[in-house]
Image (cartoon, rainbow, N blue to C red):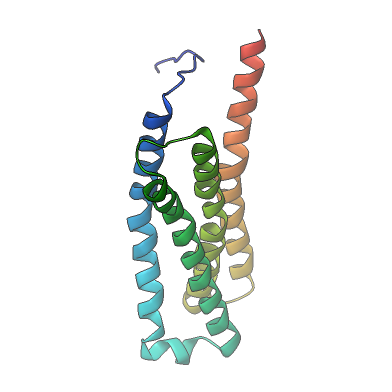
Length: 160
């Protein structure tokens, strides 16, 4: 297994903005596909048959959360367009990074709601809520805890 130094490379603001916008562009199509599947589900005859009113409202909430995630992910491009390519600032990078990171929360919650609804239709029972909660725990572990552990390790190793 290869080993990597804990060295850090500082990027010029323009390069950091380019990478950040590329990351947004890379994530967006998958989220838009999820949004499309969520919208199509409503027009299925089985939507009303298999889901109660409260579950249909939960589905609507999940659609709203994905729409919020899309808006958050698209905001850096809008900000960049308004400022112009030559006007990249540290503030733009920080704000855009926060928007990208924060967009993962409504996305994760939406995915977990949809997982719950699908699992309820397929397997039913009280285990479904536990499974959806376990999925949320996986998202939190991978998207919140792991990056912070990595950042803490880099900080500790940097002090040696």
